[in-house]
Length: 97
Image 1 (cartoon, rainbow, N blue to C red):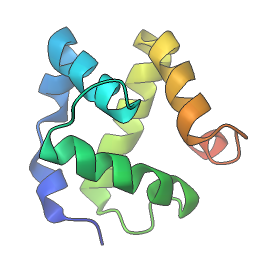
Image 2 (image 1 turned 90 degrees about the vertical axis):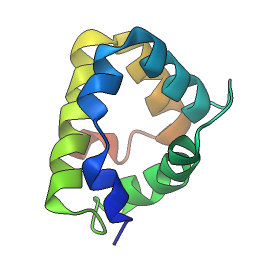
Image 3 (image 1 turned 180 degrees about the vertical axis):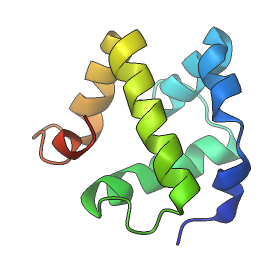
Image 4 (image 1 turned 120 degrees about the horizontal axis):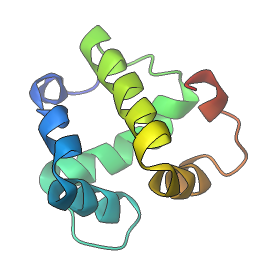
């Protein structure tokens, strides 16, 4: 299982703040510094995609889906870059969209 601390992260506040969103995005894309949570998230994303989030709690799965749909609907340019980095073959992303 992934750390339960991710259950309590207020991801909606991050998505609602352009500044925080940009900071996390730059971290995930190796374009800027990372917080401790950002570094951990960067490590988890590839495994979570490959395993269909099998180590995620139900809360983490729900948050992941909501975050993915936020990027698809509201930040398509960021979404495209994330997919290119974390799933260049398009193998895993289809499950989530």
